[in-house]
Amino acid sequence: MEIDLVAKVRQRVTEEKLADSGDVVVVAVSGGPDSVALLHVLFALSPGFNWKLVVAHVNHQFRGAESDGEAEFVMELAKKLSLPCEIGVIDVPAYIEETALNGQAAAREKRYEFLHQVAEDYDAQRIAFAHHADDQAETVMMRILRGTGPSGLVGMPERRREKKVELIRPFLRIYKSDIVNYCAQHHITYCKDSSNELRKYFRNQIRLDVMPMLKQYNEHLPESLNRLTDMMRAEDDYLAGETEQVLRRIVTFQEAACRLQRSDFSGLHVALQRRLIKLILNCLCLGMDRLEFNRIESIRELILQDQVSNQVLQVDDALYIVREYEAIQFQTSAPSPKPYAYAIGSDTDVLNLPEIEAKLLCSWMPVSSLETAALLSSATDVFLDLDQLQLPLVLRSRRTGDRLEPYGLNGSKKVKDMFIDAKMPLSRREVIPLLVDASGQILWIAGFRRSKHALVGPDTERVLHLKLVLK
Image (cartoon, rainbow, N blue to C red; front, side, top):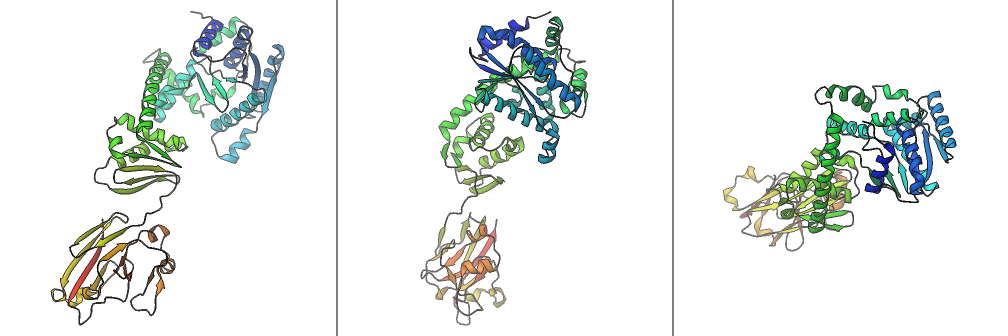
């Protein structure tokens, strides 16, 4: 059944507000049947909408004389319609070599860059593309095969804002056969792109091989896929709205960081949990390459784990998830360790050290209960003469000006210099525990070096044994 293409597009433009009266519309015209038909249809509609059309064509220089011929064809077509025409000549092969992008991605990037420039030059409000319903079905099939979530099944939108203009696709509900029939009916000539037959491009493989094969099982496959996009678009819009409400309710924003409470997050449906993580990452202006399923799940599982109290998950170079008991923070820079100090009293037998994911075992005993060989200290063990200590003891992080009098050496040395000499990583320097008595004397740098004070000797009667154990 033949459709009235002009009437169909008029209806979509009006219902979906694809363009307003008086708009300047840049029409992307490759020279193929889809874009040439789009130009003719928009030209037919322009008097009624008072549009000013601008023809834009990009010569990607992929196909030599064939590409040049398409550019000449589009210029002649624009001239026949008395429309302004802008031709962009871009050396995409050179750009591919420079950026290492694949051919289609590189061409798209440079094409959109050119179209936005034309729109800016003509103060255009819209850029029109000729993507049609079969393109939409192919796009969804490509995403299914590559792996996608519900948002990917939405497909291409009929309209979306990019930079300062609206990108519109008036043909997105129209199938290729209707477009070709329209061209034949109105004796419209167009170019044929030989690269459309090359199976080295994934989309071509989908169109030439996958879709025809699957149509053996469902001859209306493109229509079925497009109905799927309609359903998923409505559901995606609904869930996106719900997620934004959750974001406003439970997430607080700081500079380059977002913060929420674990209890608020764990009460959400798993679908909202995943979407909220994606939305937070987008709010932090992180790229879509960070949004794959496994990455989202690793973040979600960290938040939900009951046994974790304090942890930092470095997702990549620009994303850190910091968990501090019930508080979860997403941030784009490495967290600075917070100073800490824990008192050690005579009744302390175990001290948890979440900053280094370790615990300190404390044993208070008479020296007679220990064999002489057991009194030898190591990096993670220290034996102290309890009667030489000024209690209470404190296990704390490093402070500016800290000095240690190392066992076996004369004089004292800055703790900072000792760490530098040992080439200790900065991240470890900030969290390594220092044992200090009530006078401020540093007795032991846990796991690193002890001081010459409170050594166990022949006159020692009571011993404090400290052992650092990693969890």
